[in-house]
Length: 372
Length: 158
Image (tube, rainbow over all chains, first blue to last red; front, side, top):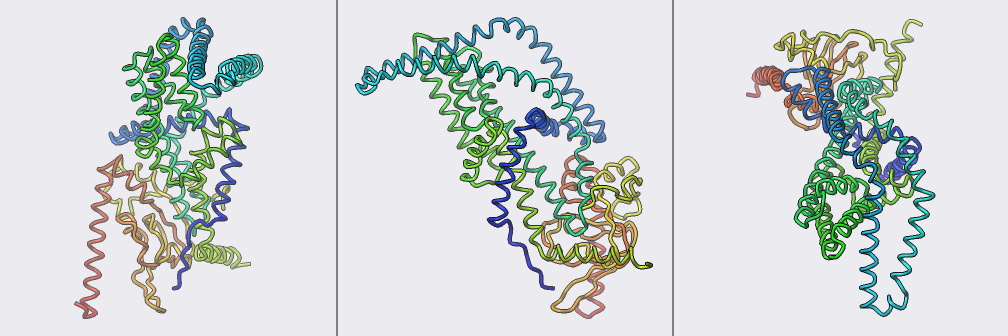
């Protein structure tokens, strides 16, 4: 029997994958209120999958294991919320004041740095760089506070209730994930069945590896940053470490915002010694380098086997199409669509599978028309 | 694609006890394996898998018959005819080598399918069940090997 082997996804299939990713990001931006809880639900699902598997290892059924895992997780969440709420409420009144204090500290450091540079550079002195930057930041900050901030706060407030969906979604992913896979597999013709099963498992493997890698990367980043900030002597190093590590989920932009946050805190805590702020920047760059060259390849890098050029290109495309949400979602969405696209392309271009499907359809047609 | 209206969608899961590979599982262990199965219906003459395909799953016959064929040059050689209760494609559980032969339904049949990744996961979550299945599989492969040796002796090859 002569068997023509499929040659894998070609350039046309890859164009389709990139186009589908862009389209998906655009659509996701329109239903962000649903996509974000879904994303957090997925992260919780992959985070809780291991303890649930341990319970199943102990002999519990999938349903009982899911009930116990999500039940304990919900109790822990409620406990943490109850513990944090009084502290947060006590500080909530001063949040705006604290924020303004840190912002002023950061701006003061920027002004001092630019004026010190002006002392060294005649060109900068002649261009009045420090004055120009200060006035630009003052105008931009005022415009942001008056025009953008209220709408931003309103959108965040509108999303918050939908975030309650995340634990529910995680519960149903844990309890019915396998049933859903079987439901999808039932719809597939016999000829494509094994390949489709393989596809479903590859999608699951890719997303699992990505989100588990993301959680590990966040923990590593947070621990390194917190330890470094504690050595430097900044206040609340653990909180700052966690916030900056979570912000790093957004490629490029998140890291810049995280660094700015750390520098603002350093400049405010130690107003007279800019060397602390510079040390914080140095620490941040060191952790970023560790992240890019050691942590990332060990965690997320192994999950998404993508060419670096495509990754960077798609991050820019994601940002352009769907803003911050696009930056956040582009890698997992591309990873899943890549697996689906490559497999579909291989299956669709396999002449033997198509011939087997046509043969099966002929047999079914003969079977139902035999006595007509 | 059949998204709606499967005639067997609401039927109770078919008992696996009659399949040799699972005959040693206890009443409590059986539902764990039931949850992993996929059920497929094939018509007489339909190809289940081809020689050279990537093996991803093991098949067990619930009803009907399946023949195992190998293409030797231009000649098609029938290696075995399997009936209800028997399994085939079992090497897919052990390695990722391509299928060594073609499987084709000789009568309308219902098969249950277990995916390799599910079986590997079972080794992690339920090692006792997985080891029982693995032992049955080893016995099954041993008997196949003995049959093959006996056949070769009869043909004067050994």
